[in-house]
Amino acid sequence: MHLTEFFKWLQETRVGSGISDSLWLFPFIETIHVLGIVILVGATGILDLRLMGFALKRQPVSQLSKQLMPWAWSGFAIMLITGSLLFSSESTKLYNNGAFLFKMGLIVLAGVNAIVFQTTVYKTIGTWDEAPVAPMGARLAGCCSLLVWIGVVAAGRWIAYW
Image 1 (tube, rainbow, N blue to C red):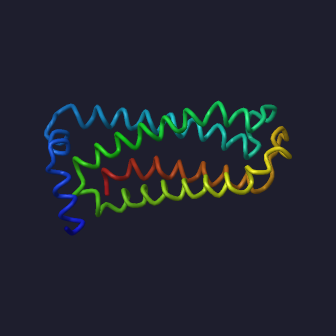
Image 2 (tube, helix red, strand yellow):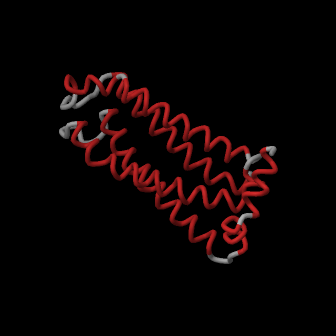
Image 3 (cartoon, rainbow, N blue to C red):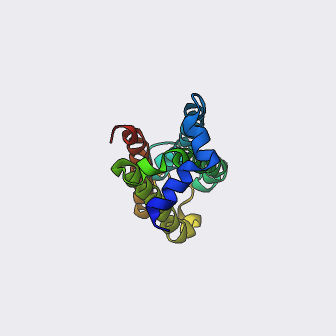
């Protein structure tokens, strides 16, 4: 089965066609998708600003991370579920949409950035956890994360106009 055939099949499934045929279901799911983005970007954005030394300088990074990461993962789960539902209703249109592909690429980049941060700089957090300004690697990871998530939001908005 070719990719285009798969996307056509996906769009014609009961779920995909049910969402696209409904007057209110797509906008309802999209609203929940946006709320997921707000939760994820809000939580990671606060942590990113702390890593860059712009906010909450007196709060240890590890403590802030413990408080915010459950919110970030919840927002990501909401985004993943609702995004999959939305994609199923428009898959033949989206798989060639440059803004959609850019958004997906940025999400992968955000994941790579998080993995690199967790496996390098975060391992030494005991030495800089309470410092008002984190080491350069942490600041760079925070800056990259913030820029990438802003890009995800912007690309998501451009999907409809591509």
